[in-house]
Amino acid sequence: MSTPTIPIKDAQDLTKNWQTHNPNFAKAFLIPINDILACINESGVDLEIVNGRISTVNPDESVRAYVGVKDSQKAEDEKLLIVATFKDGSEYVDICENGANPPGGRRLYGSGVFDFTKPCPNECNRDSPLFHD
View (tube, one colour):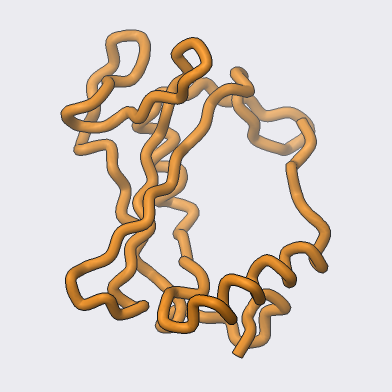
């Protein structure tokens, strides 16, 4: 399985455009790997290890990110919420409380919504080629 990366120049252009046109919004979100793994575990996805790399058995396995903000509208109060999904026909369905349960009759252990709340400006790497002042 190949990783869908993009050229660094494209990433720099995209992040510069966002950060220039949205100076009062978060520049990035620091996401702990354990949070990503918890989301994957919640979905019940089947994983395999090939040549030392973890991948999904089903290439349609995905997560969806939602952006939210507290009432204050400060960049540090922005939230990145992640939910696992499953594919139903041509649609990706969120696996979350009051929504769909994981396929195969599994039950959610929580709400299914993971709150990744470490936004930059507080959690920044100012030396990153993707960070623009």
